[in-house]
Length: 496
Image 1 (cartoon, rainbow, N blue to C red):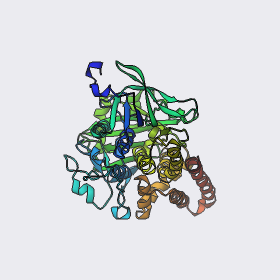
Image 2: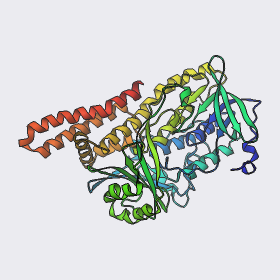
Image 3: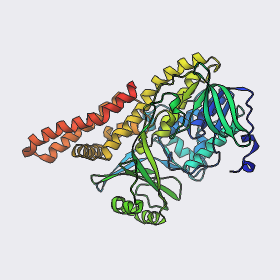
């Protein structure tokens, strides 16, 4: 976008005032922080490098917990009029078998909280559009998630920001987080087209610059994500979905997880896991040889067409435990602070629920009382753990099982699928964790090890009476493996 094309109001932010808050980044979390604080009466400056619609393959499936957070923030209109597809649960495929995993019943979950000053004039409810039936979405017996084109959703969030009178928008590249001699954050330096590098002051600076954050290191030099795998993505057009309005998880003992979910009436996203940060040298060959044999028949025509188009996209899969916001005048939030494996689609849900909690903790404070704000941020760090640790740990644990690379993990994978097939609580509890409506980390621990014990039982059945001694040794190894893939991450989330 040339200087002539950039609207003047995106370049003219006043640097002579001290803002209550500067928000760095207008991805998914940034607009929600800015809007929430503005509706609480704060004067906010939000800075984004490029306000035109992005084209990304991240953040395209929002779990019910994320939708509920948007309702709490009075921003759920962002999923309207973008051709979003309601999601009612998952279908899991395993070596040709499949099991449906619907989202939890609404009756089992408390209604979404309505935040004071943010929820007004019905902005906590969706409206009718081409793809969403408001009555069905709001009153159906089960919770609902939603799939959408990421850029369209983002532009709706940014449209909400543009309407807020207390928010000033700025297009520019943040080049520095400003600090005083006491190493306290006092604002940000922004490189603005036609103005050069300009310093803006604020009582608090929210760092929301996402996956590839430049400024998370301001919390600590060692706050660095670990990247262990990747997703290779394509767009399928007019795909014949095996289970409409479901996310699809395709598993097997001889391949890595494959995710498929619809993001518009015409477009479906497919994400194929690859167990390295470095991608295969020939993606087309890899897709044909390693992925295609495991794709359900109804998806093959659209898959083949996508292969021929050859428009492959990739994204790294990162893990980063949250760190305490202990720098006066700064709050890091969203993927800049905390990341998990995208297998379970929990990133936006964690980020948005963090915003809800953040506004409850500090939205009513005077930001010029920076010590009081910092005290509340220290509490916020520990309060967010109950919710976030469930989604974060589950994402890593499930990826370890679903991308099984040894016999013990394959036994856990087989046991997990058979556990789901039992139905009842064996589906209700896991999907409650996955969908972001049950923030109970110790119940998650209990359920995870119940799955592990069931996997041991399944293995005993497979071995039979004559194989009992071998099955006993394998059972010990399976339980040890389960502990190894679960407990270090739970510890990192709860204690770190």
